Length: 129
Image (cartoon, rainbow, N blue to C red; front, side, top):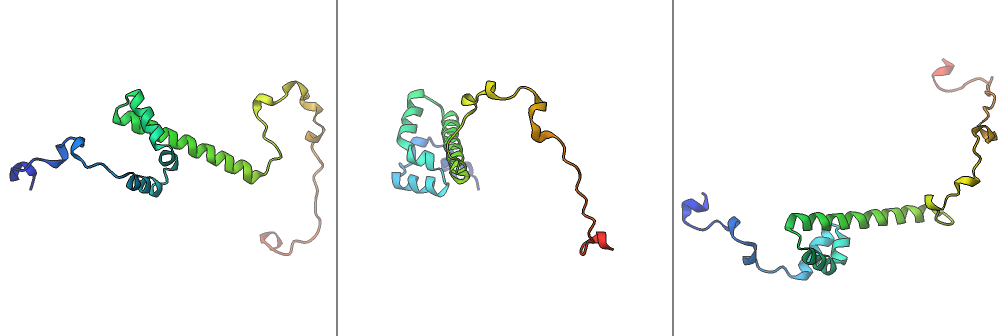
């Protein structure tokens, strides 16, 4: 039965100010459970920035999600770099294009090699049938 029929006010339409404040520990636990670590770790700074920019709820949520995605991308790249064990980091900005040969034919390793044929008998597979 709807609240209008019972004579009680609809709780879904009440302003957000009537909700009790959420303890910071509960919010930290929820953000951890959702694996939103960037938002959790920087929550106070992010909320201050949202208030300073006077963002509405949708804009604030979009901005918080963008911060989380940026942090996850940064961590993913750092993890991939550590797994790859590169001796040092190179970027395209530091690439010396002038030091590279300008002619494609100058690359001796691009010359095709002769085909290799193995005349031996195949023991397994459909080719031996």
